[in-house]
Amino acid sequence: MNTKLTVTDASFDKAFEAHNRAEMVEFFASWCPHCKRMEPTVNRLAKEYDGKASVLAVDVDEAPGASRKFGISGVPTFLFVKNGKLVESVSGERSESELRQKMDNLL
Image (tube, one colour):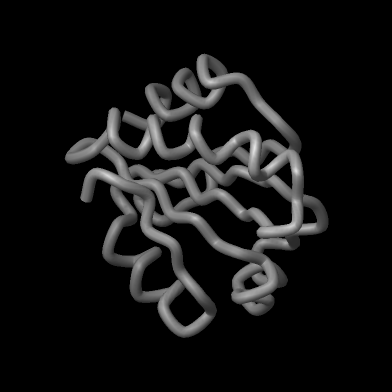
């Protein structure tokens, strides 16, 4: 997969389990200006980490169950997961270098 995988409540669990070695899960909303500004960065990281880590994108309006499961209260929120376990969570706009460093820490 060389791009992020957008998932809904119906596909979240399966995608989360299938890609659980190392992954960044982005919770976003289509109406969120901060999320829109982060989209190119997230897409670049998805391509850069292809084959090493997965990037899942979860629209909070399309996946309220997944959002509740992880206690998402604001967007964008990024979860960093290793072997199915939450390692770190950050909210708000972040620099590409910060997200890259967090991804590298998972590997």
